[in-house]
Length: 92
Image 1: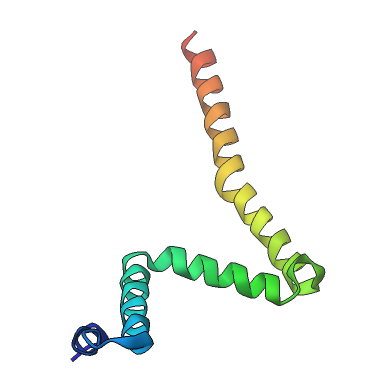
Image 2: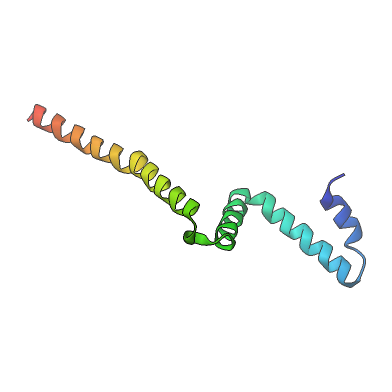
């Protein structure tokens, strides 16, 4: 038996407890539907509450992330452009 089953049975009752159960079931449904979005929001909230960019760890992570982005996006694009240029010159 999962939480939604028990919430559906309890949710028929009146009062604020029933409303809470309905809201909780709805939130759980949204979390299960978009787990990456929820994880991203959780990480962002933790980042802000933990001091944001003011911490040395955050700056190191940001610097490393930018380095990885450069390696994964910019360098392959430059190599592709260089390859296309060399192939065009060899054919022409």
